[in-house]
Every structure is written in C-alpha cells, then in structure tokens.
Image (tube, rainbow, N blue to C red; front, side):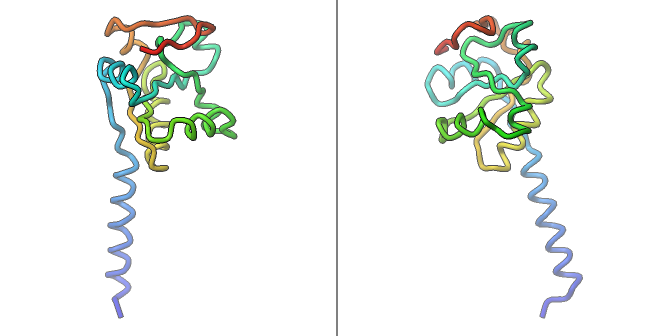
Length: 139
C-alpha cells in the first residue's frame, strides 16, 4: 500500500501540472491570425460587449460573441463552438484581458484557442475593420 505522503505528493504534483497547463494562453500576432482566418483554419472572435463594439467597430472578419454570454448561459457560444469544431478560435477584446480569460477557459475544454490581445493589435497591423452593424468579411 502506498504511503499517504506519497499519495498526497502525487496528487499535488498532478494538480499543479493541470493548473499550469490550463493557465497557458497561446498568444498570436494579428498577421498570423489574419492568415489563418483567410485560410479557413481559424475564426476570429471579438469578446467585447455590444456597446463597446458599436462605439469602436471591430476587426473585419470578427464574429461578435460577448464574454457575458460565455460566462452565462452560452446561447451564442454553444452553437458557435459546435459549428466551428476543429478550427482554432482566436480571441480579442479591448486590451487582451477578457480574451485571455475566455482563451484559458476554452483550453480547459479542449478547444484550440489563442489570444490576439486587443483590437489595437489588429488595427496597428493595418488590417481591415468594420462597423458593428456591417457583416463580417472573409479576410
């Protein structure tokens, strides 16, 4: 029989490893994100709230899925994830914080996800934007 100390040490090590894995957030440049989206290998998601997107616009190809829905009943997120199974989900918000939280949570669910950061990272790369009410572009 294993000693209680050995069992406890193994449990602590395993939990620590899982926590480290879950906390890792893949960062991605705007140029790489744009290329993957254009190739159909990824989907770009703006996790900001509708009022924020209305005020500043969004990345041209972005799907608008607020973090509040992700944290809530996921009426928008569940069908989106089902429809995009197998694609990488690239997230952004205003500064990267909320996108990082959703990215981490998706990673724990086995979804391939990356954090672009903020909308400014997209616009600073000279990539296309659109107004909140305009349809998403392919690139």
